[in-house]
Length: 102
Image 1: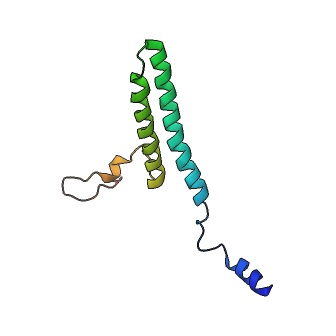
Image 2: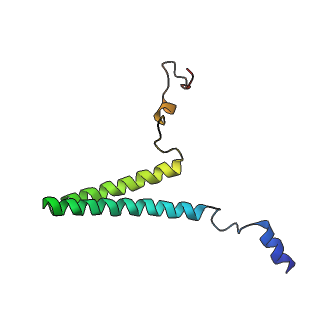
Image 3: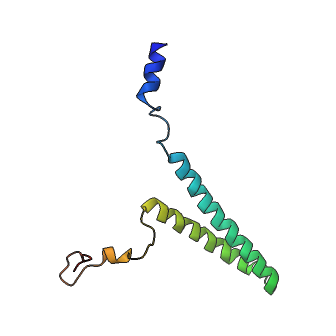
């Protein structure tokens, strides 16, 4: 009984996922599935509208999959594509990192 309490007091099982990992995995799955579903649906609607059987469906399926992967990459990298993202990686003519105040 004492050992059980001591084990629970030490924290979560080290073989499990870290705290918050389940939420991250759920978001990754949602981003991937949503991109594919939305792209496929829009492609299907455009095919019905223009009468071009599988053209837009296939094209937007892959475009939706790519958008889902891009969203996952943005989330995992923690940076996203916010304004000024690429400015951080520019270097001035001397090869030094550019600072905001320069």
